[in-house]
Length: 389
Image (cartoon, rainbow, N blue to C red):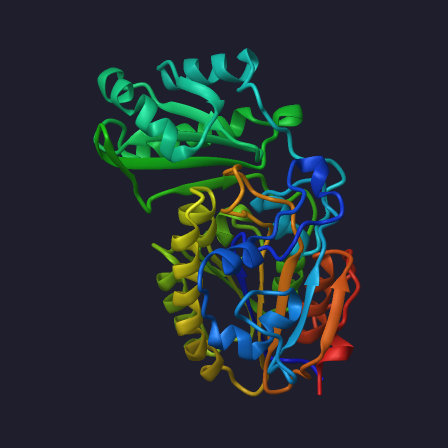
């Protein structure tokens, strides 16, 4: 009853409603997808056909009587709402303790050895929006050559630098130094290189961003798939999120549409195993910038490409669409929001039914393992038996 291949696509930050504990994170009432639909005349015909309107009430996107996909939503059991812990939980790794946060910036025991190691002082060292802080400090950075360090409501140490002031490879070297320093109680989820170009008043972040994540402390679904002799093909920032562990081949992407293209390229190869894709634009370009119209346009652009993915599925394939957290662009906050994530599962052998509300993202990892026939003893309760015809 196993499948040959699962294509798992994370629509980064496309949440579908506040979790019961969202108020503890300042996210009470958040609903990324529903609030976008309530604000913009959103048209998602292909996702509608799969059943996205059956997951949560959406203005202009009604539930359908017989969705083409299995549908539901999932709650997070990890304490947090960041990219790394969300993806890790999807792959069966639930963190007992959240990653550290720095609402007042990084302490001297981190900043001082970092400055000594790179031979420069840092600018910033505070929570900030990435686009705002480069406008605020970009000119001083260009004058002094000192990198901009900042964080957010997530567990991140971000370093921004103009590509003509600090070359990208040098910026990556700075990030690797920070990653080595940020251990123990200061083991942040990600160190992120944020290169940008342009002139004061007209700075633009480039697509040469790179994430330097902690290595998962325990095995994940990816390790299990590799151990079973199958392939794990990573598209977008998946390789960075898992620090390269449990991945056969990988490719970084420029944007969402490139992510769809590269996913299709891996699908054409016909290798058995898992294709794991992250489409980051929803979060990075629109959610964090509270750009509702841009977010809606990105959703519609993905929806237009979705038939290409569906048509490329073989009989023993399944396509899974989900998310890792929310990032409601209609709220005053520019940070992630703690939300349920959607779940749509489509395939020629997949039974379209309501799979309800899963208690943890890890249920999906267990299900993917079962669908592929992979031995698996990590957290999560598989619902594969519900799905297969």
